[in-house]
Every structure is written in C-alpha cells, then in structure tokens.
Image (cartoon, rainbow, N blue to C red; front, side, top):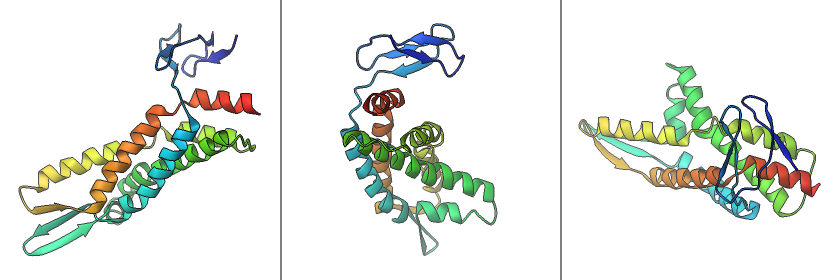
Length: 198
C-alpha cells in the first residue's frame, strides 16, 4: 500500500484507490491531498507547446488602443508593466512576474516534464523541475491580470474610445489554455510516473 504525506499537517495516510476526478482529503485536517486526474503527459505536452506559441503574440501584440482627444495610444502587456517602472517599481515587478515570468516558466516546466514522461526519458533534473512547477502554480496569475484589464476597460470606456487589438484575443486564448493545462495537471501523478519509470 502506497502512502502520502499531507503538506498541511504532515500526517501520513494510505493512498486510496479512487475513481477519476475524485479528490482525496486528509483524514486529520480535511485539506486536499491530491486529485485523481486522468493525466496524459502527451496531451499536456501538446497543450503546453500551443500555449508557448500563443504567448509571443499575447505578450507583444497590442492589447488595447485608446483614442482620446485625437490621439491614439497602443499598449501591450509588457509595455504596460514597464511603463510603471519609474513610478511604482514594486507593482511593475509584481505584474511582470505574475503575468509574464511565472506563467511562462510554469508552462515551460510542464512542457519539459510532459515531454520527458511521454518519451520515457528520465534525466536527474526532473525532481527539481517538478518542485519548481509546484511552487510556480501559486504565482501564475494570468486570470487576475485579465480581470484587472477588464476593470480598466469598463472604467475607461466612458472617457475614451477603446479598440481591442490582436493581443487581447491571443491573451484570452492563452488564459483558456493555461486554465486547461493547470486543471488537467496532477503533480502527484507526475511524481508517481517519474518514480515508476526510473
């Protein structure tokens, strides 16, 4: 019988046999231990590669064009964060890290481990990448950035003419892919596949 340690209270429990999409909870603190997801690394590899390709236009193409008093200004995600460097460097770094760096590293990490598991290649760096993936899941906040962007749009729409650029639609596609990848990724499953495949 396999065992698992709760990361919240350190209780050791037996891993139960569970149907797909069911959640195992700690008997002591009732927190989630893991979710039994039918996790196919080949599927996540394809989704991750698609997300990495979409990131380029999502980050570099214009998100919104603002037309006010005869002047039109275009901005993309990276420009928006870099414009705040002089006045609010901490906020600029937080936006860059949570909306660009962390999601990029997270998807790259999942793509790398998915490729290794798909092709039965087990380099020694995989445990470090799995630890990094687990940490980055808490810092990747594309959806928070999207909500902030929509709030800004609703506030600006009464003062200026707004036009959505190609970057906005690529960002929505990236957000949907990111949510699909994270919801289908099982950290426990990947560790199990790595240990069994070595």
